[in-house]
Length: 114
Length: 112
Image (tube, rainbow over the protein chains, first blue to last red):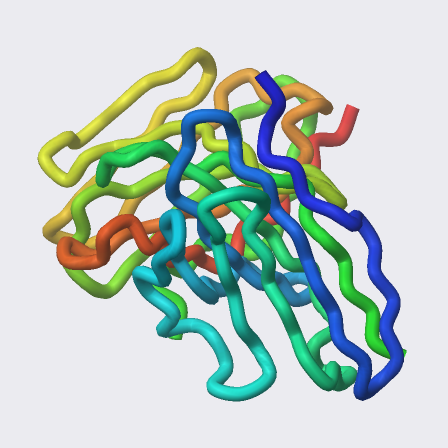
């Protein structure tokens, strides 16, 4: 049973380009979360999605960032017109339904904006 | 602002010693979870303690929760070099529908 798969592992973009980060949840998991981690810091919540629905996007910047979790295919975190401050590790986690289910994390995508 | 705050920020001990990390939080919670992160990797779930529990064990891990003080501790007994990692506590607000909020973490180094 494969874990949470994120790709790419490393992504380099120039300022102004678009970054697309992909996340395939564990089999049977219908809830997906995106977190951002700056060096030497904890994870900051960005967005929580279920299939075809955004449940909580309170941690998403108002501009340039969007997320989706379509009926078929992986969840996508999209960052338009990237800036240097977007450089970070972006982690996806998934869980089955249930308030007390632990999160299963992928190994992250490290985005570097040059 | 972060819900959870770990203390200390960094801890270095000898192999075989016990390691204790603390976490404080601000709002009421459903449960508190501890995760480990090895360098360059994702987080791995260690243990979950519910708000109506006071202590929980899993192998060499012991977690306590004091809801009156809004604090938790993680004890790793008989530490091993492989325990070297960052450890994070995470909490969910009662109305938070599993939106976990993580602390800054404790960087634990086990010296052989």
